[in-house]
Every structure is written in structure tokens, then in C-alpha cells.
Image (cartoon, rainbow, N blue to C red; front, side, top):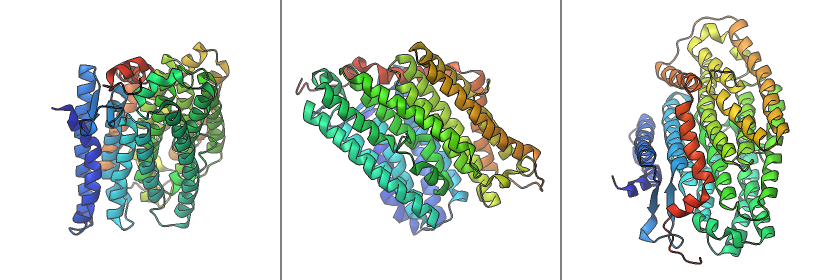
Length: 495
């Protein structure tokens, strides 16, 4: 199949979003099933891209309009993009199925359109080879996320969306100014050519530009101090959207941050930018874990836990080593699987029992044993218990931090795991050892999704080598900038 078909990863959700109103006239269920069909097709295309890239070892590069970069715009689907575009598609398929029972608020056609655009935005952020188009896709992601946060039409969701809009606007401004500084200095927006010319950039301009880009992406990446929107949005948004926020919206921003930072690793002021990111990552972990400890709403508690895990990933990316990037990508994969499992299960409990407060989970092991089992697997995995997937990525992050002399960062990861253990075991105690109740019938479809994710957590925990190899290749795609530049067919303009 022609590599240009990979452009369907962008075209399919965009065109489908405009066709949603056509299906509205056929009834509400027609829109819901159309959403499932589109995400299933997206998963098929993403699976083909993944197979092609990982089988051949070569990236798929889509050149828009036949104009070679940097004049034309290109998509770059290397090992990282191929892997995470597949994750985005699979998670979107799961959440579209979950949406049938989880989303009852009208208008459902608007929900479906925003859902598809959110998937499109995150996919574009990961696949683009141009930093201005990265900004465009980031804005698509952010604007749809604002609307979806407010979708439930409650005072709580409106307040959460407003916080997100304000911080998102600040972040977008920072990012755009950073891009302007880089463009003004190098005269190009193409990522490969930026890497080619980065050594010629004034160190101060590069430092300021990169710092602004990090701060700009910190909103979507949920890094302190620009992540105040996240817990409210996670709690107020429809349950399937919360899954998407945690599984891939934040990952797209983290990838964009890592990609731009490593493209410019030859600039003299690079080390100071990494130190800024390390400080932000450390503060993100500390603040989020302490906040999670105080929560009585389980969905909000898991949101803070998710933010803390993002801090670990940012820390790994900020180490400036291949081992750190590999460990960060490995943790991104494991975090995506575990948090999809947790938010899916907790959202299902909230729908079934009328809320996500801790008392609702008392006796859940007797009332909804399959869902309780799924939450238990996710909770134990997040803590970092051996034989569960997150254990291996946490260990690799710890080893990577020790290798560069950041002993305090390794201690921070271990300490955070202790704090996580406290609030997750509190949840597990409530599920299995408190309360009583009658058995509730559980959805077979949602149960199968939870079982699949829980099995994946355990299988990776017992046999981590295959996924680690995927993560290592994806990490090298970010870190090996020389190979990235070599792969992109530049005209040589401005070189």
C-alpha cells in the first residue's frame, strides 16, 4: 500500500466530523455507531502504519501537495508516531464504545464531532513534521477539549472549562512566541531543518524560545504550575473524554515537548532548558501526589495520580540521555494502558452507582466483582508492584536518573510510590473490606474491555521485553536527531 495513504489518519477523522450531522437525521444511535465505525477504521489504518514502520524499520513520510519540505508540509510517521497513533486509535475505539452507555447528554452529534476532532488533534501533534502545524493541531486539541470539558452542562463543568480556557490561552501564547523566536532566528518551521540549523542559533534566543515552548506545552502536558485545570476537567468531563485526556492528549504534548527539545540539543544553552523541565517535573510529582492523598472523589484522586505519573515521564525526558528517553516512552505506554483501565472502570462505577465518591466504592468487590478486579489491577500496577507493567518502567526511570547523578530524583520516584500506595490501598480496602450490597449486573462489552486491559497490564508485567523493545525504538526515534534529519527529504533551502 502507498505510504501516502497514511494521510488518512488526518483526513478520516476530519472528513467524518463533517458527516456527523448527516447521520443525526437517522437517529441518536446512528451517530453513536458511526463514531464506532470511524474509530474502527482509524484503528485499522493505524495498525497498518505500525506494521509497515516496525517491519521495514523506515518511517513513512507524507509530503503534502508534492512540495518537499521545508517549502511543503510533511507528516513524519517514525517508530514513535506509528506506535502512539495506534494507541490513540485503539483508545478512541474503546471510548467510542463506552460512550454509548456513558454519554446521554444532548446534542450527541456535537459530542461525536468534538470527539473526532480531539482524536485528530492528538494524532496531528504526533505526526506533523512542522512546528507551526504542531501549533495548529495543538489548538484543535485544546479547543475541542475545552468544549468537551463543559459538555455535561453543569456549573462544575463550566467552571472547569473556563479554568482550562484561561490556562490554555496563556500556554498557546507562550508556545507561539517561542515558535516565532525560532523562526525569526532560523527562517524555517520544518523540524528537520531546525535540527540542521540549530547550532547557528544565538544561545540566549534558543534558551528563551525553548523555555517558552516548554511552558506553552506544559498546559496540555499537565505540568506544574500550569496544570491547575486538569483535576477539575478530569472530574467534570464525560467519562470517555477523561480516558482520552489521560491516555493520549497529555502524551501528545509530552512528545511534542521532547521532540522540539532534542531537535535543538546542539545549542549551548540546552542544559539550562533541561534543568527547567526537571524542576517542573519534580514539582508536578510532589504537588500531585500530596493532593491525591487528600481526595475523597476517586475519579479526582486518579486524576492527580495520573498527573504525578506525567511528572515521572517529563523527568525521564529531561535527563538528556538515550536511557532516559527510552524509559520515558516505556512509562508513557504503561501509563496509557493503566489509566485507560482505571478511568474506564471508575467511570463505569460512577454511571452505575451515581457517583465516584469513595463511599460509593465500599463493598464494590461484592456488588461489581469484575469492575472491582479491574480497578485493583490498575491500582496495584500504578504503585509499581513487581509482575505488573508499571514496575518495569519505574525501575528504568530510576536507573536512568541514577546514571546521570540525579540521586534525589530517584528518591523522589520511590517516595512518590509510597504515597501512591497509601491512597490506592485505602481505595482497595474500601472495595474489598468495607460495606455490603447486592450483586449488580455488569456490562459484558465494558467487562471485556476491562479484562483485556487488565490482562495486558499483567502480560507486560510478566513479559516486558517485547513492549520494551517497541519503547526503545520509539525513544531512539526522538533521541537520534541525525537519523531524523537524514530521513526527511529536505530541499536544502536555507542550509
